[in-house]
Image 1 (cartoon, one colour):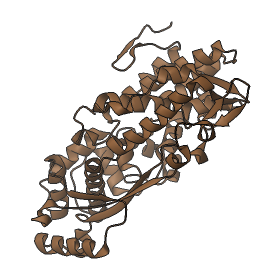
Image 2 (cartoon, helix red, strand yellow; image 1 turned 90 degrees about the vertical axis):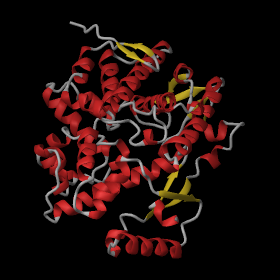
Image 3 (spheres, one colour; image 1 turned 180 degrees about the vertical axis):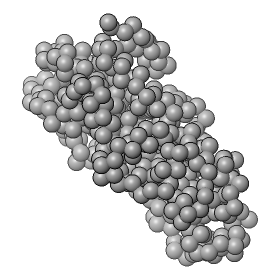
Amino acid sequence: MQSKKIFNDPVYGFISFPFELIYQIIDHRYFQRLRRIKQLGLTNYVFPGAQHTRFQHAIGAVHLAKQAIETLRSKGNEITDFEAEAVMIAVLLHDIGHGPYSHTLENCLVSVHHEEISLLFMQKLNDEFEGKLQCTIEIFTNRYPKKFLHQLVSSQLDVDRMDYINRDSFFSGVHEGTISSERLIRMMDVRNEELVIEQKGIYSVENFIISRRLMYWQVYLHKTVICAEQILVNILKRAKYLSIKGENLWATPALNFFLRNSILKKDFENDLLVLENFSQLDDFDIFTAIKVWTKHSDKVLSYLCHTLVERKLFRIRLENNPPDQKLIDQKLKQVSESFGLSKEESDYLVFTDSTSNSAYNPHTGKINILFKDGKIMNVADASDQLNIPVLSEPVVKYFLCYPKELDK
């Protein structure tokens, strides 16, 4: 019997789906875990409204996938109900492999990319649902003959990006990220088994690329967000170091498992207990532990945890060039003397790295524009408004973080 469930989404309004299997997967505990993982990590330290979750994002992305399927069908492209269900489930599960705080702690607790873990979850769900997700897996891994279905899930202009740019703009309050996802979808078509955007949609594509660039540098890579997230990473690094040394740290069973073990992809594949523990891990495990660790005897761990819990964040210098080594050494010496720490311990409180972003990366797939005469061009060549080759070049920023007390 078809479910009558309706989601009231703040971005799109009322949402419903045409396939019962989608609702069954949404109700599964693996997917419900996404309610407890923030979409934007610690971005709410700068934009207080950015409290939305991976669960909300996944639901919204499936809604856009449903609209895209309807548009493509209306233009004579054959998509069976079997294929429509499969691609919508692929979109639904594309982020299910994210760990706590989304991208922030990727490769920190486990040395495995989130998409690889997503695939492992899909395979496990495929077993539970008696093979009904096999086509979903083929689309997700780009092994299905109709390549445009995979492009809806993962490409330079997929429904994932369309949703997160609009949703993150909405919840952060940064309106420069607003895009017309509805117009972009209505301009979609298929040629040579690949997605294209009709010529009259080129300005919407240009707006999409610019909005993505603005969201990265104004929200995702805001210097205070970078600082807070790097502190979180160092907390987990220190906790893992202490745990492996045999230190007794309070942690939930799931978190304790990953603190005491170095997990690789082969461990996920060979031991079902690893995936099961990962399915129990979310933001709540991490932040509850951090609150407890504020009282830990280890000076480094305690200080970092206080810094994050009380939002007494570090000074961060974000520059176009790498920081001067003399300045780094000076800050390390100051930390060592002020806090009574060794060189190795001081590295947790003075750290430098880089971050980068390109608004449009033609090396990982192109956005193709379909002209009225049937000609197809990469948007980088078709655009007469933007210097897209420049926008496709990665912008690299270097940062140095250290306790604010050092500037006094």
